[in-house]
Image 1 (cartoon, rainbow, N blue to C red):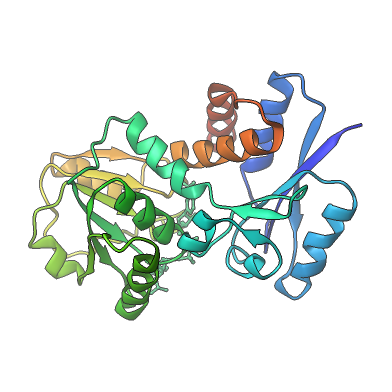
Image 2 (cartoon, helix red, strand yellow):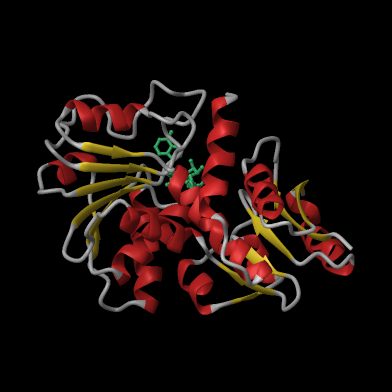
Length: 275
Ligand code: NAP
């Protein structure tokens, strides 16, 4: 019998996850299938119950359901601390968050030291919460910059409930630019296709020299923010590795088998190359 997993979100017209996971299942000879499941917010409870009743093993969760699903599953401590679930094991109805390990594992894979690093996090949504939580656990000094400052303040206050030693504050972009920076992580959707000429580091604010930029956006592969970093003598990394590594963590959770990371990278890159 084919084992089933999938992703719920809305509108879910485009996702690289089916190609990534199905390539991994095929490479390991597993009779598993990963499906795209668009679920509108008003039927979210049903959207979880139906796959569970039909024997699905697990689900990934994407925009706009990452917070809302927490009412219907048992969120583990990590997901509660981050305030978002992106992976569910339907066998136990436990929800967790693999965005955090996806990001931190990818930063580690790129040899980026985090302990004591001065990191500017752009954004204060679900992805930023995962980033700030993981960076805090890694000993980074974090400055959060967000369009809505109040959202950033609330995010830090919530994360501090779980990590009293979290070294994080909130600044405007102008203020952040005046302080030393080692690493900038873009956790906003600014610069994502089709708005490829936009950057969360807005015109007129001096770009720091020689910093590393990690852009969670992976479409396009080279964002405007990444080009800014390179123009100012820095290093730029796109978000494909985070996408693959958060997926690999979900794969491991569902199957109990180490994910074939290289196969997953190849599948994602070949999908992205199609445009
Ligand atoms: P979210 O919860 O909707 O948060 C969006 C964030 O972007 C908020 O901080 C929002 O600011 C900010 N923002 C949106 N439009 C903006 C604009 N025009 N100007 C300035 N700020 C703007 O979304 P999310 O789930 O955190 O995802 C954020 C991004 O990360 C998306 O592009 C997503 O694809 C990407 N992501 C990538 C991976 C990966 O594996 N590579 C994983 C997760 C997410 P306000 O608070 O002011 O609204």
